[in-house]
Length: 126
Image (cartoon, rainbow, N blue to C red; front, side, top):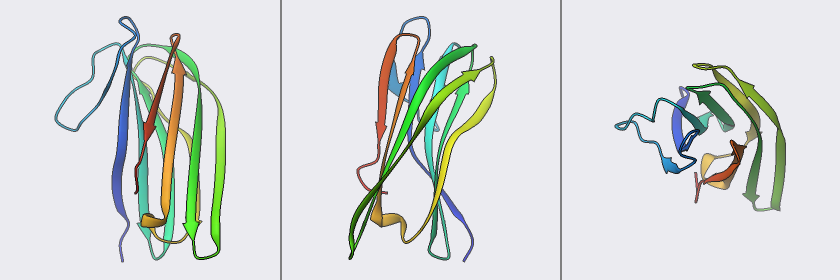
């Protein structure tokens, strides 16, 4: 089975206007925006979730990624977070975690704080 990437959610934080909207593959973000994405890949019962960001202008902020996994044995929660500093045009992975299991057993939430704004991307179910 080959890896199958999915884009879970994307969040755009506009630097100048400080507004947010969901980014889609059809719509391009504003030129001064910070684009954030949760990505999922699944291969051979291995699930990898990553939080990525790309800045169209230099930005500094913080992020927190929270991942919930449900299984027959119960529920577990992983939290990863930290600071980021992106140059204009730079794309980076903020956080990444890999698990045994199936994609449908996970929920994820990415919170980004930059330019005085807080926005959250959530996956209802992956």
